[in-house]
Image: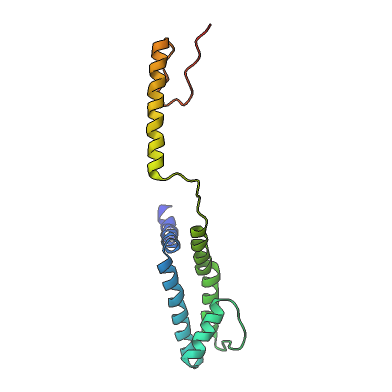
Length: 152
């Protein structure tokens, strides 16, 4: 069963790497445009300028229709280009930049978390000393609840 899942895990890891690297995202976008344009130019026998224009318009899903593929090979390239851009590359680019815009200003920094933990240790030690002095049962390790009040 693990052998069957291995390719999917590898693809997932690749997507995570892609999503967390803006340089890789932009490079893959540019590379796909150039490769699709080159293949389009070969299959449709058109110039590089028209091929680049077609690839950018197709990848962005604008689809002006001024240039469209006639051969089945170029149409297959268009299907792959549109599918990959719409379902993978553009959402990953958008998600990456959106995650950079959404910043939790209330989140504690690491040094603040460490200071809070140290302060809690001091408070816990003081509570344990007070409990021992007053004859109350000590706080059990790992317990967040205060010691039980003594009976009057």
